[in-house]
Amino acid sequence: MKASILCGQCHGLGPNLELDNPTQCATAYGSYLWAYVAGGGDKTCQQCHMEESGLGHNMQSYRDPGMAAKAVEFEVETRPMNWRDGRTVTPKVMLDVAMTNHAGHAIPDG
Image (cartoon, rainbow, N blue to C red; front, side, top):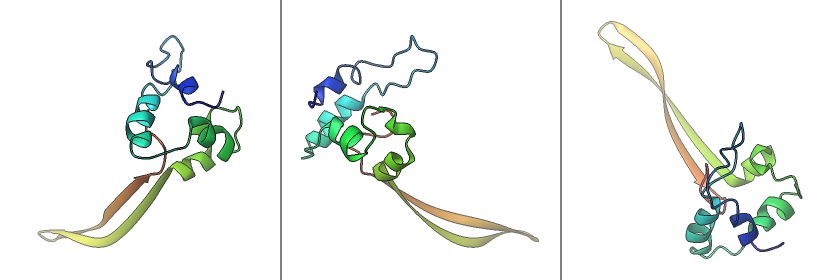
């Protein structure tokens, strides 16, 4: 029950399209193996999604705000500016957005 391959049995086979709202991450296990573990990661799926998150068997961690905050970090920098087109001056905002993935797999969909 503590090995990631248990999760990989479903999360590596493709979406469950027989459901009205398929939510299964089809490539999560492959991403976990070939990116996270290959890059030196040593946590199991269960450690992040069940133990550390405190969600236990509530496997809907993608809907949990705490899990989302732990998985992805956003940094946004704004710069105000004015765009001039002839006599028309339009206020604009320039945005620099950096997203850092701290999850053990790609986001979204594994």
